[in-house]
Image (cartoon, rainbow, N blue to C red):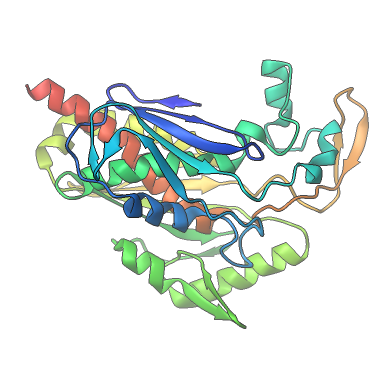
Length: 328
């Protein structure tokens, strides 16, 4: 999916080892204050190379504002945001003669008749940097008076939180910090003891050339009861549609906590590109063994938290603009 939305439309572009990724945002209201630092804050939470429990690819993910924002105010015209790819290694993907099990290599070839020369192309999680950039604006717009959105890592493999409760974003960013040697690892699971076990599990999987899946929880707390009551069914379907478009998301469950809070549980599959030998077949259908190279997350969940928040915010803001248009 490259374009999402109705009254608010977000189109992303770029491949994992191309020159850049970015987005065009149409329909964003004029006169809204937004700074580059606010966008950068969420991109930094998502960026690769954060620690040994994430990919070793090192990208600064510095956002460039090319249009639609001037003097920290939106103009009402299309907003163009760009993030340059600086640490590309297309040579890591010489295995592309064999489609990776569980990845979109085969699907893209069947649909378009061609694949990106390196990496996952549009199916790479690198594309989500553009979603986070766009969604950071939407988070800023909805959080003060309409809806608060907070996500956290609820489970990695068989290690899980035992309860679900409301957290602040600051709690998610700080309670899951674990010191391992000289490193501070951020699981974004707001429980130190559970986070420590998660770190050990991810580091073990990484040393074995394997990967792990898990569950991210996303809590939507509605400030405006009118918006929630009028749009509840549409919000759930539209947010679900948005979140299921995130790479690696394979399951979606809604838990209603009370009349103003909804918790969504998202199941993420393990990363497909692993060093362990897998039996698969090549493009001609011949049985082959595949051992992948490249720099990939042993578990995407710690970096996926801001992706979930910002993608939910894009869907929520689109619903909000529809709601406002219906009230006129």
